[in-house]
Amino acid sequence: MDSTSIFRIDGKVAVITGASSGLGAHIAQVLAGAGAEVVLAARRKEKLDSVIAGIGASASGFQCDVTNDSDLEALVDFVVKKFGKIDICVNNAGTSDPEPAESESPEKFRSIMAVNLESVFVLSQLVGRVMLEAGEGSIVNVSSIAGLLASGQIPQASYAASKAAVINLTRELAAQWARRGVRVNAIAPGWFPSEMTQEMFGNPRGQDFIRKRCPMGRTGELAELDGALLLLSSKAGSYITGETVVIDGGWSII
Ligand SMILES: NC(=O)c1ccc[n+]([C@@H]2O[C@H](COP(=O)([O-])OP(=O)(O)OC[C@H]3O[C@@H](n4cnc5c(N)ncnc54)[C@H](OP(=O)(O)O)[C@@H]3O)[C@@H](O)[C@H]2O)c1
Image: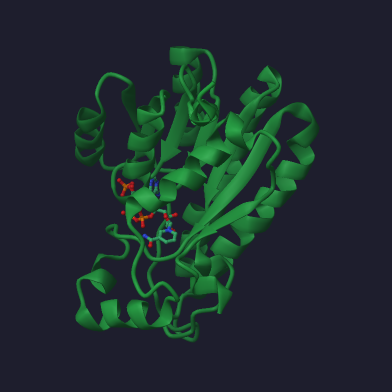
């Protein structure tokens, strides 16, 4: 038997938020490539449509704002009506806007928490109900090395707090649902190319900062997320729950 077949997710239905660009678009491509029907969610329809066109018939889209609870309810209804189930949910939508803590407004802090943390709870709850009823499912949350460490040099209290909270929300949901077949895990990426990081990547000082600070001396390539993503999404990870897999070239070990 081919032992890599445990990473296949043929016939599974996966929902990916923030799939109009960056990591989310890549994650949708990878899950579709491993056999899943994928539903891509985000606000920008044109971007979603172009990612969906690149994936083909196994992809569909749903335009939504993850900070709007009724949009998330409508997303889950759409998927359940179309496929009758949800096997995998990747809570990937996220935002950041670095600013020193002494000037970051409470409104901005709350709005970043709404996207990066609150939406993860709300969608996990909605999807979790469907999965608990079915007695199986896997949720993968996208945290960050910023949820493990302070950065200081890139000041972002809201982002850091939200990404740390996602790690313990992941553990809590995992512990509550572990005996009912639903696994909840997270990935914590280091530096990867996306719209969020384009300023940093496009700037020689930014590139230099990453290269010098990262033990592997380089940024990550999107394909380097795939192993952990598929492990947590598939049968290969059937005894793993509540974990955060760090994919950062060693950034967080020093
Ligand atoms: N790139 C990295 O190095 C890195 C490292 C660690 C963690 N991450 C995490 O990876 C995730 C993806 O980020 P990225 O780097 O790929 O950045 P990105 O290219 O800016 O992607 C962010 C995605 O989130 C969506 N989004 C933002 N606000 C939303 C909202 N209110 N409702 C629905 N969708 C929303 C965006 O879609 P629309 O604008 O179309 O809605 C977009 O698809 C984030 O959670 C980020 O924190 C990234």
